[in-house]
Image (cartoon, rainbow, N blue to C red; front, side, top):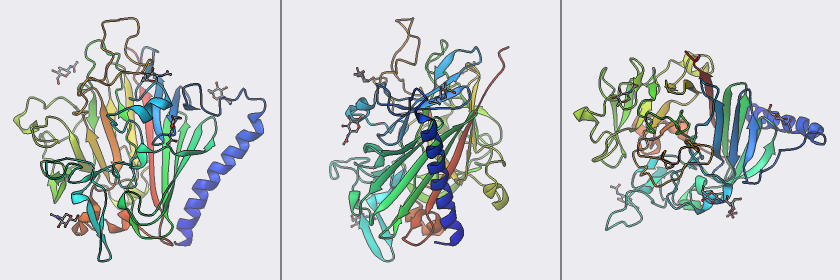
Length: 412
Ligand SMILES: *[C@@H]1O[C@H](CO)[C@@H](O)[C@H](O)[C@H]1NC(C)=O
Ligand SMILES: *[C@@H]1O[C@H](CO)[C@@H](O)[C@H](O)[C@H]1NC(C)=O
Ligand SMILES: *[C@@H]1O[C@H](CO)[C@@H](O)[C@H](O)[C@H]1NC(C)=O
Ligand SMILES: *[C@@H]1O[C@H](CO)[C@@H](O)[C@H](O)[C@H]1NC(C)=O
Ligand SMILES: *[C@@H]1O[C@H](CO)[C@@H](O)[C@H](O)[C@H]1NC(C)=O
């Protein structure tokens, strides 16, 4: 590890420790909410925003913000209590951190220095391969199936850690990781660090928050298809086959095509009548589950905090706008194609006073925006992503930084 990188990690972890020490000083007289509430959730506070988290998957469970009418909305999917995260059978990766390698790994295999590793499959089962033919989000016991440890919690910040041992899910070597979420003003900032300590291994993380910027309370539609997306740097996408495994091709998002979210803001559902949307998210699938590359020059990449959002998500109904900033070079957009209307809303969502209003998450009821590395880059050396996806003891740490920045339209 170079000195500069070492100091980055020290800085990230040190800053956290300092913040924690500061809070502890105040801890005695603050009527402390620094710990889980009765539902097992840990809360942090910004300016006009607050967020709840659970150790399971280091997941965000609630994100509260007032809409343009001043009504509080909870705009992420999740469950009412921490216990239910471990009981839920569908496991839609609500709000968690998939790891140690997010998204899909072709054939559940990869190679490091001439050695082939076979990891546990859990995606696209067939008769011959009942467990699946590829690995999604780190395997059947990936990070977002496990309880992280809360190592620090202040009024505006929480840090989770996980130790992922050698051989777990078939991955080589021990990995220790720290996930820090902080609310600063109207921003939700996050830093994810992972360090392999014994062997070279792939690492790729992301935040898997599901958004419905109307808090599922939109009386015109409970879908998210009227949310607008703008991804100005995403002129290309990673080509995938019928089961969403990258083929190696990088495809242009032609202007005016269903995958054009770069030339101008566009509603998620705007092209759902187009014949080209069928199969866009896998065989027979209508919608989005696509990895768009984020093409910025080196200066804009290094200066990611100032050089503009990677993706903007906005709902005119609530007036809530989310600008996603990140140092990552890809962003996956998923339009909740696999939701089937069986998952209940939280008590903080929907319209409690109207018994006939739907209280489940419908298909296309949410949007997931995952900032990450180029998916399955470990199986595509031709892309040259090795340095950003393989990590070894004594080398650079894995670092992901991002910022979800919120604003709200003026009420007309
Ligand atoms: C945390 O911040 C919230 C919102 O600003 C405030 O109401 C609360 O008193 C703070 N709690 C502590 C323990 O400082
Ligand atoms: C926990 O949340 C689940 C899902 O929302 C709900 O069915 C259950 O009743 C809750 N349990 C408690 C003890 O609140
Ligand atoms: C994870 O945390 C949940 C909620 O606190 C708890 O119900 C569950 O037993 C924990 N699971 C493990 C494996 O510790
Ligand atoms: C898939 O992985 C297995 C090892 O698990 C290997 O034998 C097989 O050749 C691989 N298939 C492809 C198409 O890469
Ligand atoms: C909402 O989306 C639907 C389907 O994409 C479209 O027909 C309709 O015009 C949109 N409504 C608004 C208010 O933008």
